[in-house]
Image (cartoon, rainbow, N blue to C red):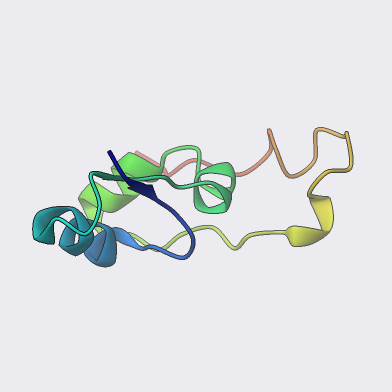
Length: 71
């Protein structure tokens, strides 16, 4: 099985799986910044910007404070 990662959005991820180029796609940074990533994919709504300055700091900021979609 091949799980790919790095820079995939919804359309590219679906195309990679449907074409057989990957069995699954992993979302790292995009998921950290969008705790409701699956719902954002469903609705086609914009993603939260990723705050790279908060990565690997050991603090909560950047890991637990990204906003969810309203409603």
